Amino acid sequence: MPAFCVSIPARELRGICEQARARKARLVALWGSDETTRRSGYALHLALGFPSGLLWLSVPLSREDPHYPGIADIYPSANRMQRSTADLLGIIPSADADRRKWLRHGAWPEGAFPLRKTVEAAARFAHGPDRYPFIPVEGEGVHEIPVGPVHAGTIEPGHFRFSIVGEKILRLEERLGYTHKGIEKRFEQMTLEEGAKLAGRVSGDSTVAYAWAYAMAVEGATGTEPPPRALALRGILLELERIANHLGDLGYLGNDVALSFGFFQFWRLKEDLLRTHAQLFGHRYLMDAIVPGGVAKDLPRGAGESLTAHLERIEREVAALKSIYDEHAGAQDRFIMTGQVTPALAERM
Image 1 (cartoon, helix red, strand yellow):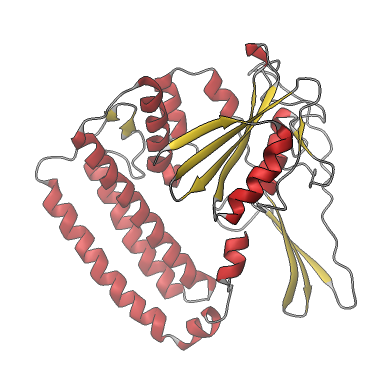
Image 2 (cartoon, helix red, strand yellow):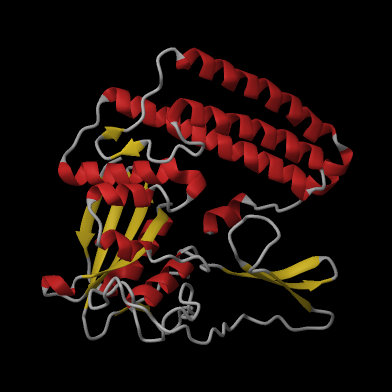
């Protein structure tokens, strides 16, 4: 996909985003950068995805007043990215935007911005108070139910504030970011080889996806072309990772509607696949298999046929389990009409 980069003044940001939205472009990412070491100020960056390619907008901001017009009313998904950028860099959206903190959680004081170049990577801050202004819902019969941030499973922490009347959920507000690790700052201190290992550990069960993205960035910056076999192996690794994650998710679907049989069967299939990963590539979750320039692990000779047979067996068992999910009255009662998102709402978000 071709990418185009353009620098624009802050006053033109909203107009361009409105035009992009009208043309069905989606917001891919929003982030900031500290350009003060280049005798400049700060910059806000957006990536907009069009059918014809990617548009990278860069908005220079002054060192003294790094404010910009917020775009969360145009692209609702920008809300958390704007708040994260404010927490980390002090790049602040307009006054009508949501300015509540997102990542800080009292881990560093208000007015300190860890991703600024003036902050040392080894800096430590005293943990301060952590008061978060949830948006209240009022009315007759409204109850608030807090869930988390500590959960019973091994999922990452998150706080969910439900406002309900009976069984009807009026509002759900999430607060995440509890496991913010300062990864961006760590990257600044690392070599490309060290960065590759860190990228593969941003999210353990998506190590291939993150490692490949990092490798592509390094290869693009250095003009490196990976060998064709390495690209093919990357594709195989990514598909294996995707299948393993989908098997786990299908099991969780059963678990969430009290069909524990489905949970255990899908996780049995996932465990078998993870063991195959370890046998073929040396790691259950395929860590460190992808490196800038190629791959660090090759598929053993003759392993292709056994891997294909294993995947065909998974396909047959998934088909059988699907029929159980489809025909189980209790599961269907809980699945049908649950969590519906209309195409219009999905497009607006």
